[in-house]
Image 1 (cartoon, one colour):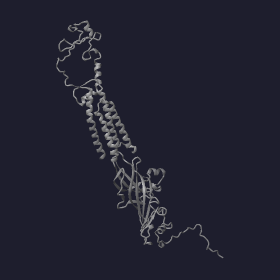
Image 2 (tube, rainbow, N blue to C red; image 1 turned 180 degrees about the horizontal axis):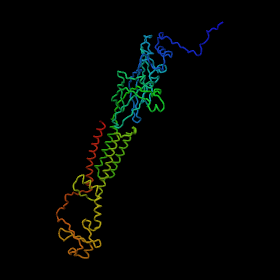
Image 3 (cartoon, one colour; image 1 turned 30 degrees about the vertical axis):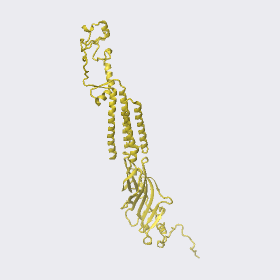
Length: 492
């Protein structure tokens, strides 16, 4: 009797064949999609091919409905977007056996059983798919196999900022999408032809305003260099992301900073502080407590104001516009203190100054070099302490008594003798003596005005007040000129 095989199992090395149900017997949309992606007929890791010969085209559309805080300290910004990807997968075409099903819609992630393009954000710091109860992911399959995947996301992106004109700067912050798995020979990203990127019409930003927005297509190259490949024996096509060029899409947001806050909280108060420091020019040059307190208080207040404004900015290697403003305003406030110290020093002098002309050149020259002139005079007359009023008198003999005579005695001459010579010889002035030197000094006639040869005498107090009056004009004029140049620079 031959053995029966009715209860025998198949050999262990025989492959297990799973039969797929007939799709024509399905009517529910959920059952239809599940059977379309069943493992018996669908490979979720395989790139959709169909009848095409080139790379798979994936259309991208984006809607921006919120732009959050743009943080200069960490060089990042936040955006809420809806990202939509569209491609054709002919393995999901069902119009031939289910013509009554116009559309298949499914919520949630389809990555478990359905192939989807892996697109990532190049400048991403953090991203999350939004949704409270379930993730905001929507999948749509059309009868011809067109798949549309929509995702609502919150993304935090890096934005390299140029802060040279802060707070009058304009930033260009990008959002870069790129294919992760497949290079450009297998997958191409492209923007949808009509309105690829849209923005919420009610979008309002706190510190910036959206000036412009544009989209772009590019290709990123991650191929290994020839020296690396030869050194390590690597072929770039075998090492994932380093295998050739990858399709990329860019959205650039042109953002201009709103300056109203900085104008009212920084620039206007700093201008007022500089103007307040000029009040010292109207005070008495000898009012030391008032002028010192006014200058130091304005300086400290301005430094505190600047520190509060720049605390939210990163440390950069270049000079910002606010730092130029700080340096110049500090120079004006410090200049008012230096001017006070200068005029107070002049005010306390005792000696009058003779000026050839009353102008800035001669006044400043006389105030800056009085000590030098007195030293020169003192050194040239040190040998005739008794005749310091006549710098041309010299001692003829160092061993003899100090005897100095000035010509014959008349109304226009003056005879200068030492006390010892007069005590020994009262008629010394009328005796000719070869050891005596006659010096003739003209003496103005009584009642005639002195001849100063055009010189004008000013007291130190008058000079100090003259400098204060000029400072009242020079400091405001220089500050106005600086403002014209500064505001012209930041607005151009």
